[in-house]
Length: 119
Length: 107
Image (cartoon, rainbow over all chains, first blue to last red; front, side):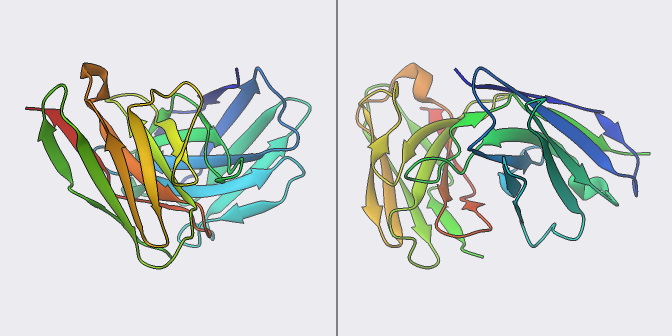
């Protein structure tokens, strides 16, 4: 069973860079796409972007200028950096596997980590 | 971006009821439509892919249908554990987008 676990600071100051890491266990990181998805408190889900295990990326244009997703295959980790954050970036951040399969679905999710942007 | 619109936004129902949630895409997405269930404080759980294929382990009371722009999620006989928020998501083109969610509450 694939498991994902997010880690990183829960509090980030405005204008600084949010950095999170996702560790994959119970399965291979190679040969799959891996995504970051966020959810502001009480709101819906927003896809941030994904990375393939080889390193190719695809970002949401609404965040593209501020987002970097990277992968460390030997460590079975992938990471998110979001620069110049504001209060609007306060959200639960999920790492997930996907798009995957015939429906390009997101089939495994981390538990999520709340990141608050505040001074 | 492809806009996904779910209806209703909230729904009250009783155990044993049959419920249907609708998801409409702003353009054709073929069958690239997935459904997720989210309970408070938890990550979404993947239920249905490619509009109508049930993920392994998901109870058969859940079913999905549709293609093009109009899709439905049906729960044939609500169980207590089904009260949650449901999201549709299109995976036809990036940026992948989700519906705003349908909150299913106990009547």
